[in-house]
Amino acid sequence: MSTADLTVSWTPSRPGALHRRSALVLAAVSAVGVIAFFWPFLAEPGSAILGHSRDAPWLFALILPLLLALVLAELAEGGLDSRGIAMLGVLSAVAAVLRPFGAGTVGFEPIWVVIILGGRALGPGFGFVLGNVSLFASAMLTGGVGPWLPFQMIAAGWIGFGAGLLPSVRPRIEPVLLMVYGAVVSVGYGFLLNLWFWPWLAPSNSAVAFVPGASVAENLHHWLLFNLATSLGYDLPRAIVVGGLLLLTARPVLGALRRATRKAAFDQPIVFEEAPA
View 1 (cartoon, rainbow, N blue to C red):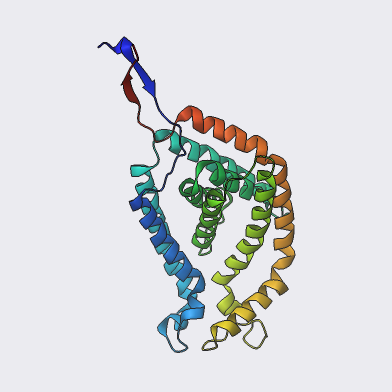
View 2 (cartoon, rainbow, N blue to C red):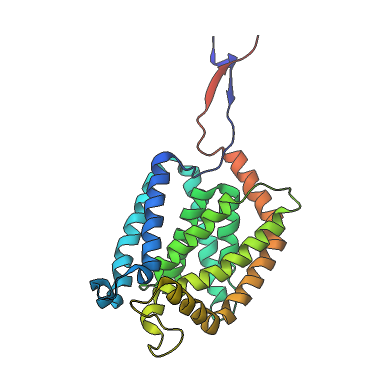
């Protein structure tokens, strides 16, 4: 049998597939992220963590990048080859370049369109990494580096991850599904990001302040009131703009990304088979 009698076959797949180790590492990073966001609801009134509440964001700012680097290493080992990394770099660069266009413009944040469509087309693992890398790259570009950055990165990662988990629907319905998802996560992102500073920023004598020792339900109520009073006026325009952009761009952009994925055949070894006689 000669090489002329061999054919090359493979089945295209999406990059960043979640193998067992990668899934476990991603779950660990997400667990740390949940603790980072919701620790005020779980801490005891006299605990040391409340006494050092202003230090907590800096602590998570040190921990989260290390864990996210581990996610990148795991995905590179099992689910991202050079082609997937190239796609990640291109989409992250596009997102980073788009973010400054929304600076100072209420609601105009096209970066979320790139993250959501990238996660939808290329899978939840890729979407998680894309969200993290995009926010980090845009922060480097705009100088928006601070204790809030790890919280932005983990929240953006969850948005890309969720986009990859959306169910399969008919092509005509898919833009509507993504529009609804984009609008919901745009509001949820704003509410979630408020948690990194709300416990000590809101006036202690107000109805929207965090109350150490109060029940979880009471503090959740105060947190929701704080969101409605402070950030909803920004979150709703973001939801409308992101949802509208997704409705307009989902079909052509997803088509282009899926064609690129099929041609690249990410994470698929070439298998030589004997040609039929």
